[in-house]
Structure formats: structure tokens, C-alpha cells
Image 1 (cartoon, rainbow, N blue to C red):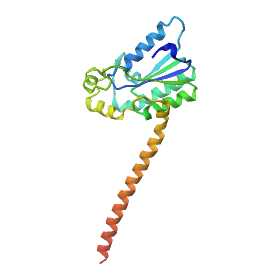
Image 2 (image 1 turned 120 degrees about the vertical axis):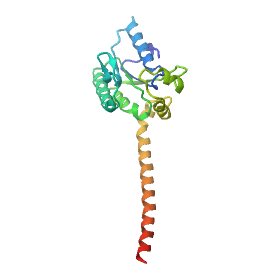
Image 3 (image 1 turned 30 degrees about the horizontal axis):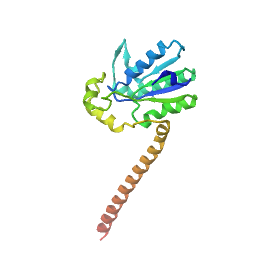
Image 4 (image 1 turned 45 degrees about the horizontal axis):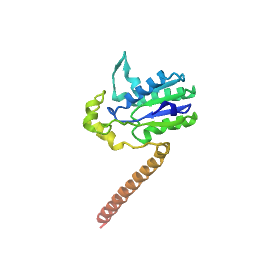
Length: 196
């Protein structure tokens, strides 16, 4: 991503599996902002990982992950309201659902939305991801993330997850209805046998 191509008020959603080079790319982008002699960039990086930092050490707790994401969203919304030039979300942002809340915030505050996806050769190589991720995310979790990965994210895809959710809800309702119909038939058959 070339910072010269960025418009003022840009929200960048960095995306990638743990170990894919996502945070490295964000750090390189921040260096480019800091070293740009043509402009004084006002930027901020929001990450759920910040929630788990204690005395300079990363102390992850799965039970507080929801809290960490809520804090990240809250910080992001606050920073966007101060009209920073660039706000970067450094989370995995794997699915449309995960991106949606940030995209909606960005649009609400009239930001341009960009997605920064991994370009490393090992970005989707489970063996390498398992070795390289700094938070010791186990292979089975990486595999799950990989199955949920939405390539080439766009604003439309991020906002379209609501339709996916509606379709999923319809599928669940249909499955429940089928289950009820089957059980009602069994129950009716049992009642007929009982009455005879």
C-alpha cells in the first residue's frame, strides 16, 4: 500500500491469519507515515491485542476476548470522531462479519475504507503460520480461521454479511421446522397406536 495514494480520512482494515505478516505490514505502514517528509500524518492503530498488554508483555485470556474486541471498537469509534488522517484496525478481520462493524463506523464518520491483506508467500500455509505466529495460536484454531477467510474483502462484502446472517437464520428455521414436522409425525403415530 502506497501512502501517497491514500485519501485524507482513510480507515484501513488490516486482515490476515496470525503469523501471516499482518502486523508487520501495519508497522511498515506506520514507519512510512513517520518518515514522510511531505506530510505530517495524524494516524492511530487500534488492535484488540492492546487490551492484553500488561507491563509491556502480552497476556492473552480467551475469556476476555469479547471485552478486548469491544474496547477496540470503542477506541476506533472515538478516534474516528477526531478526524484522524488514517485509522488502522490491526485485527485478523477474517470474515465479513468481523469487518462489518468497523466499515459501518468508518462510513458513519465519512472515511474512505481500504483493506490491507497479506502478501507474504506463507499467508495461507498452515505449517508456516503455526511456526510464525507470535501468540502461539494452535493449528486447529488456524485451520478454523482459514475456513472462514473471505478473500479480497470489499465494503460491499463486509456490509453484505447481514444477508448471509439472514440466510443462515432461514436455514436454521427450516431445519427446526423439518425436525418439528418429523417429531410431530412420530408423535401422531405413537398417539394412534396408544388409542387403538
